[in-house]
Image (tube, rainbow, N blue to C red; front, side, top):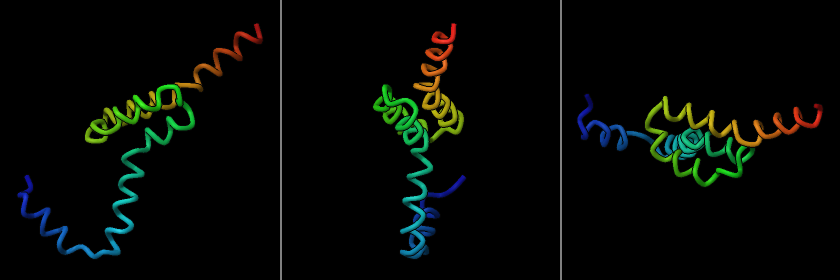
Length: 86
């Protein structure tokens, strides 16, 4: 698909300004599941961060990890509130 020298050529042609905004933006997007877990699933944050490293290479695994990150405390709060009202 791509020759390894093509990526090197693109890297050499990019400016420092482009890299200064692209690299942090890429890392933030790559670790979105970990950032979500920071707020919603702290109990499994370490596991989600470790799973996020290889999962970022697969869109399906990355999306599934977002689901896992959201399902932590949010699910527990819903179940607890349901039990209190009964």
